[in-house]
Length: 125
Image (cartoon, rainbow, N blue to C red; front, side, top):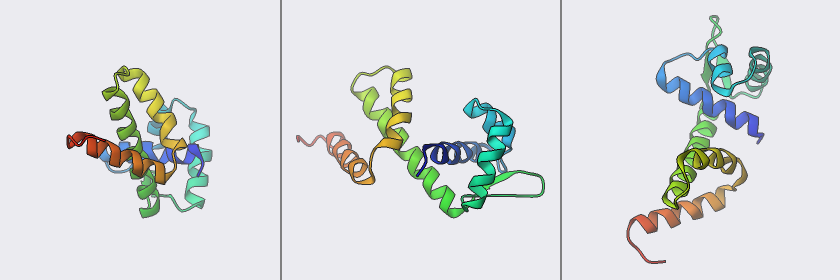
């Protein structure tokens, strides 16, 4: 999966949680990219079945798009939490978590999640 796809779907998901129906201009502002760039990517995401648009040009995630977005956000949040618990400052942890969410396999993510769960439960590894 392309990093761009995950980033856009995650951004749409986050914006959708604030209000129903996301506009391209909001995505452009959030990702700090141009509106034409957003249009090109949204066209591709529509063709790939990750989003739909209504006649007012509002963007909505499909079930498949939502699943990818939720998984990407879950990874991001876990990596940010892990890094801050290890003493990394918030800004650096957030930037690194954005990189890590795309690089780690589902298997490694599950293993790290298990490790964090064990540590929170007080279990010695």
